[in-house]
Amino acid sequence: MSLINGLPAHVLLVHFVVVLVPLTALALVVCAVRPTAARRLGVVLPLLALVTLALVPLTTNAGEWLERHVDSNALVRRHTELGDGLLPWAGGLFVLAAVVWWTARRAAASGSGTPGSARGSGTAVRVAAAVLSVLVAAGAVVDVYRIGDSGAKAAWHDAFSTTSSGGGDGDEG
Image 1 (tube, one colour):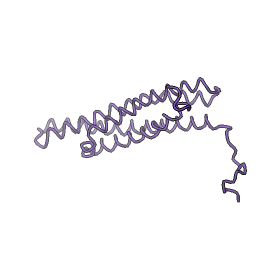
Image 2 (cartoon, helix red, strand yellow; image 1 turned 90 degrees about the horizontal axis):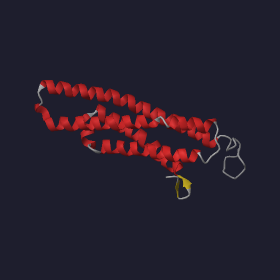
Image 3 (cartoon, rainbow, N blue to C red; image 1 turned 60 degrees about the horizontal axis):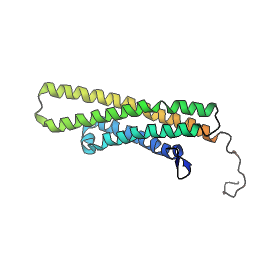
Image 4 (cartoon, rainbow, N blue to C red; image 1 turned 60 degrees about the vertical axis):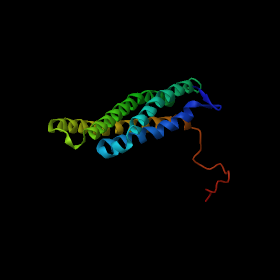
């Protein structure tokens, strides 16, 4: 996918990634820390993470097409390098979302009559999933921020003036 309605697909797809990665990360952390939230959200959590995961390579591929159609410079190359690193984070969000969903589903199915040893191992899995979820979610959000910041710099460097052009925008003092 290279163009959507005459615009580079990357410019449009990136907005989905910028919204869905932090949203998925937040949902994952909430569900990992609060099992009742995971039970309420149900299969929506891993499906959201799957959609996010699928959008990352689509956006990256569209970005690689765009990279071949713009002037290359250090800012564009830096953005491309950073963008290539998001897929593992999105994969981690998906895997952990599936684990959190599965553990919440298993806990709901077993009910309160769970033997002590099974309850202890379930608690250990939930705690490990919660800790990993917080770490991966933070890493994914920071990575999206860094990629977006580098992309904005690559797209907008030397493309605007800090002083008004006098176009009547109401900012004149």
